[in-house]
Amino acid sequence: MALPLLSGGVRRGVTPPNEPPASFRDQIRHPDLRRLYDYWESRRAGRRYPARGDLDPVEFSFALGNVTLIDVLYEPLRFRFRLMGGLQAQRVGQDMTGKMVDELPPGIYRDLVLRAYREAIETGQPNLQTYEQVIEGKPRQFEVLRLPLAADGEKINMLLLCPMFFDPLPHWPPLRMPPPGAVGPPRRMD
Image (cartoon, rainbow, N blue to C red):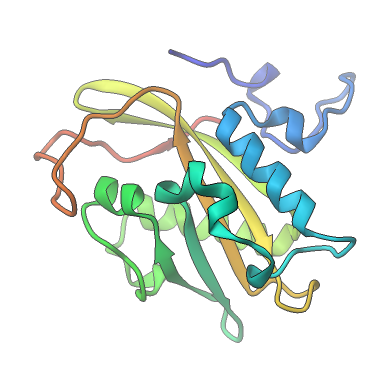
């Protein structure tokens, strides 16, 4: 199912001129990501960000296999995979838990995630991106929701990310690389 981009290919989170502003929540197309955002919002409790300890994974079990937690380290700014969801690890072909993001092999994927994580820290806002990736010869669109977390409610020390595909994906054995040529690099859609 091909999903249209926002009008004029405008990046999400930025209101185009002469168009009414939409809430961030209204820009989220995948229903499970909307539920996850609502849960995150409910846990803020008047603070800018909830803490990791405010979240109970049982309460967002509908997204757990896709959830990845990223530790944010400062001076210099770096990111570490604190926890990679099982479905996400299966799609990537390895569990990245405990590894530094900048230690990923050079290329499109590493550059894409580093840019997205830095943007989340710089803006201090939840962000959402739509991507397309060719898997077994078929273009498949997915959204990635990135939600900041802060132990003190103010300084981001973790990101909760959740990618969700709009169409079902092929199933490969756990933690084995997809067949050669079966998966292309993700491409940003907005």
